[in-house]
Amino acid sequence: MRLPASERARWALVVAVGALLLAALNLWWVLTYRQDFPLNVDEAGYTAIGVADYLGLRADGLQGWWSAVQSQTPNAPLLPTVSSLAMVFKPGVMVGFAVLIGFLVVLIFATYGIGERLAGPRLGALAALVVGTSQGAFLFTREYVFALPTAAMLSAAVYALLRSERMRSWPWAVAFGAAIGLMLLARTMAIAFVPGLGLAALVLMLAADRAELRRRFLNLGIAALSGVVVAATWYYHNLVPVWDYLTNYGYGDRSAYYGAEQSVLSWGRLRSVTDRMVADDLLVPLAVLVVAGLIVLAAVAVRRVVDSEDRRHALLRLAGSGAMAVAIVIAAGVAALMTSRNGGNGFTLPLSMLLPPLAVAALRHVRLAIATAVAVLAAVAVLNVAATSSLWAGLAKPRLVDVPGFGMFPWINGTPHTLGAIRYQIPGPPTRFVDRDRGWTEADQALAAMLLKRIEVGVESPVVAFASRNRAISSNSVQLAALLDHRQPIPFTQLESEPGGDTVANYRRQLNSPELGEPGMLLTMDRNTDDFPPLITQSKAEAAARPLGFQRVATIALPDGRRLRIWEKRSPPANAAPARSSGGAASAPRSRRG
Image (tube, rainbow, N blue to C red; front, side):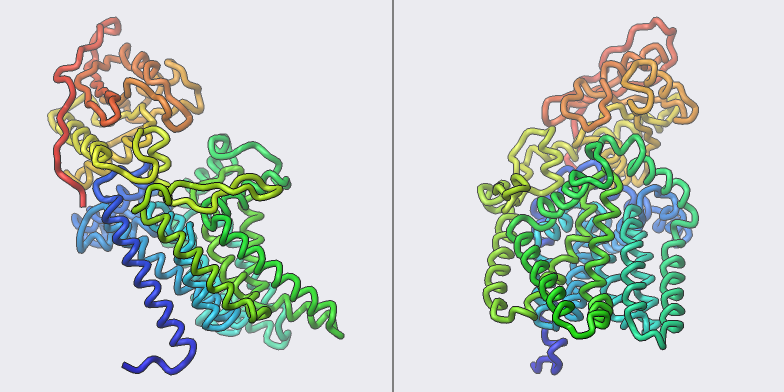
C-alpha cells in the first residue's frame, strides 16, 4: 500500500490513525463505565431531548422531528438533534456518547488544520494529538453536555478563517460563517466567542493588502450571512426565551448559584476563568508547556518588531499572522467569560483547545527543542490516558501541586465529571460507578412506570411537580426513562425556592398555580441532604401540599436509603389527614437502557 505523496496528506493520515484509536478508547470507556449507570441532571435532560426528537421523527417523519427540535428552548439543539438522527439505527443513551466521540474526531482534525496553518503538517499533527489526549477532551467526550461540540465548532471556525486567506476565498468565508452558526447551535453561551472571531477576521483583513479590501469585506459579509442563516434555523423561533435564559443565568439572580461575586475587571474574575482552564481542561503539566510556548512566541514577536528596520510593516505583518488571529479569539473569549460570574460546565473548553496549536507553533523557532517537547507531550498523553481509563483507582485520584502565586492545581485527575457530581451526594467509590449504582436507573424506570400508570387511570391533573433537587434522580432522569421505556412523556414541573423563598406559602402558591398547570401529583424526598441549590426543604413542600388535597399514595426506596414519596391530589377537606403509604417500597424492574 502506497502512502499519500504530500507531506500534509501523510501527517493527516497519522492524525486519522490517532483519532481512530482515541475514538475506540473512548467508545470502550463509555460502554464499560456509563452504560446502565446514572446520568447527572444535565446529561439526563439533554439525552431526553434527543430521544424526544427521535420519537417525533418516528411518529410524524421530518415534520414531527423538526417540530420537536424547535421546541427544546432554551437548550441548544445541535447535540440532541444529531443524536436523534443517530438513534434511527439504535435508540438509547449510548448513541449520544457515540455522537460526542464523532465531535471529538472533528475537533482533532480541526486542530490539525489550525496547527498545519501555523506551524506545518508535522507540528500540526502533534497539536492535534495533544488536544485529543488532553484532560478536557477525555472529560467532555464522556459527559453528555454541550462543551465538546462547541469546542469542535469553534476550532472549525478558526480553521476556516485561516484557510480563507484573510477573507480572499469566498468558499472558506462561507465555511467560516457556517461553523460560527453551528457553534451557536451547539451551545447558546457560545455567543461569547463571536466577537473574538469577528475581531480576528477584521484584523487579518485590515493588515493585508488594501487593494483587495472591498473584496474581503464582501466575503466577510457573505460569512456573516452564512452564520445568520445557519443559526436562524433554530434561533428565529427561540431567540427571546434564549435571551431571557442567558441574561438570567449569566448575569441575573440565578448566576449567584454558579460563581462568586467579583468585579468584572478584577484579578479574581480572570483567575476564575484561567483556573478552570487549568483544573478542568489542561492540568498543570500541559498548562506549563502551553505557557512556555506562548512566552516563546511573544518573545519572538517582540524581537522581530524591535529588530525590524520598518517597525510599522513588522507590526502589520504580526497583526496579519494566523497566530495573532488565534490569540485574538482566545483573549476575546476569556474577556467575554469574565463578564459573567457563572463559570458553567465546560465554558472554557473551546478556548483551551485552541491553546495547544498556538503554543506548538513556538517549536518552529526552537527546533532543537522539538524532540524534547515531543517526548514530554507523549509522556503527558500516556499519563492522561492511564488516569482516565478508570482501570487503576489510585492513578485516577486527583493529585495536586502547589503552583507558586496561584495555589493548588491538579497535575493528574482521572475522576469523570459526572461521577464527581453524583458522588457529592451518593456514597460510593470516588473514581467509578459500581453495580449498586445501577439501582438509580432502575428507580427512574420504576417511578416512570408508576406515574404513567396513574396518569392513564386518571388523576385530577396529569402534571407532576418535582420538589426534590437530588443529583441522581430528577425530573430529567425520570422523563428519560419514560421516553425510552414507554415512548411517552410525563408533564413535569419543578418547584422552585427562588424567587419567593424556601417557604410553605411559596410552594403552596406554585402547587395551586394555573401557570404550572395545577399539578395533580407531587414527588418529595424524605430528606434533601446535599441536594443542589437553590434548596427546597422537602417537609415544607409536603406541608404546602396537604391543605390542597394531596395525599401520599406510594413510596419508592432508593439505593442510598432515601425514600421518594408520591403524592396525589384527591381534593379532600382542607383539614383531612394525609393517607399512609399504600404499598410500601415499590419494586424496580430490571430492564436496562441501551
